[in-house]
Length: 248
Image (cartoon, rainbow, N blue to C red; front, top):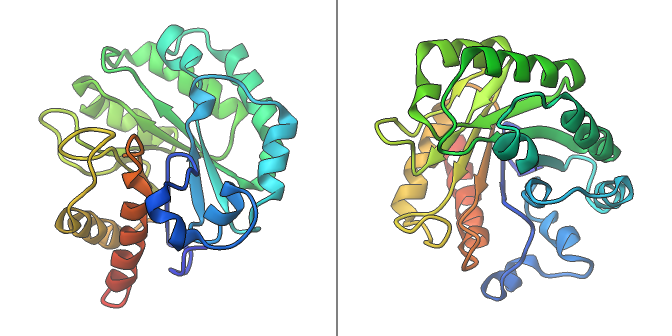
């Protein structure tokens, strides 16, 4: 666990260790084993692009501490190709394979394409199917403004799905979590250049304060991995949250 009593988890999208951050991940073992000595969670984005064997998931689970947890990004075949329609079989295949993570599979992340507007019937059918097959945590990152209305928020609450607080936020929206009140999920993609830019410490401090003030357990994932900024920013976030904990 991050040394925060389990209330907050901080990690990155993937467990790459860039050259600039290697000193912070000293020791032997694979990148994942070294990564897991500093962070208590990771977001697996490769599941968005391709399936993995159950044996691969099992190997990952065996290589990290008991308290470590994984978030898995739902395949693009479901979110971007099927666009959430008739996704039951694809969900079953994904969830069956990734079940080899055991209790370390903590979150299923549903990132939607920017063009996908909220359609109540489609969303209801999709989340009903997902919930029928999966009882764990769900986080959804919608990127169309229609998913921030009252009807969509109600749906997220009913299906115990956390609406991601994503930076940069959808135009016109605040950087704040929504939906489920059981947990929250932040994804920080980098600013000003998405996926590339490192964050200013003041910006990370503001997010850390918001996370600390939120009453629920939270994940915070740094996704500005293109030039390797995520690891250093995640380590900074750990320090900032530790400082916040001393005053909350």
